[in-house]
Image 1 (cartoon, rainbow, N blue to C red):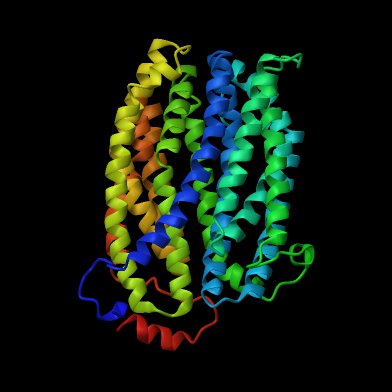
Image 2 (tube, helix red, strand yellow):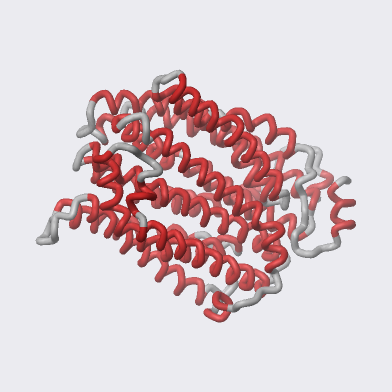
Length: 468
């Protein structure tokens, strides 16, 4: 039965759910393996004490900013490339990937230079604790060399994702985890005759794992039959899609980059609450990152499905998919909330070497996340997995700008530095937008004005079909 004639508001086609699951699971697996790398660093460095954990957390604020930038680049690539993939235009996919690849190299190289030349100045933006600052500088001097390979590998994997080749991401993440954990054990603690390097050992392990990721992703991208990326595609100075990328991709990049800046500012706020608070937030965020992989996997799978369907011009089916996905998002949010609640009992077992007050604070922060993650599951996935993937890239940017800079950051700063509120109250302020954005997401998605074909299709014809 054609999607436009289906009176049911939920998709009944088994193929839809099968395809969504086959896309979501490898992406979720890739995400959980990636976050397990962070957990391994977090847990193994924790044996060195709270100062080491705080130093790594501070150094990773810059990494988080870079990750958000490359996430924006990858999302911009996915928004455009998935729609062209819906038309099976692989030449366009290759050209867009090359353009994004060059952006990623330039940005990561500039950040590498800034951190390498001024490590103490950059780290000082996120903490005023002398001990944490010293540990952060020691760690980031080595970690900075991983910025370029991390960004380039991420772009290549995003290209594979846009053409529905998602399993390679899981394989690469598994390799990175194995390399990182093994080298952490050898270099942090000086096992098997290796030097005992402490936090520097964790940085070396991360660097080697990023290099391995890039090598495998490059080989696979060159051999993948769907696209067969060539070196000429990646190094070409001109692309016929530059204008489209700047028009539709820059709002996506700006949105994720500003979100990364938001996270960096949040890190600066937390970094001034004391060593125990820094360590507790680090623990809570790591646990949340692992348990929320299903949310992010489904969101990214939704982006592929929605983008491909919009590119193919099947607008009635896009609307039906959007209704179904919203129900799935809420269900996944409730499941994730239950998992986070259960993790509160496990945290003392995993982080047994931490101070009791720090562990108690981490449990309080996880209780906050139990509530906010339901909002995250719905609004984040609806706005980025549906609205942004459907072509309305500027709306998501403007929405994030308002809530972050007019609500989240001001409320957290007032709570922390004016009222000197407890850490869990400040943390709740930093997460409040996850609930507030739900109303905006519900209205925006169900008006369907976000459906825009970005593949240079007949816009007037598309607008007519969208309003049917």
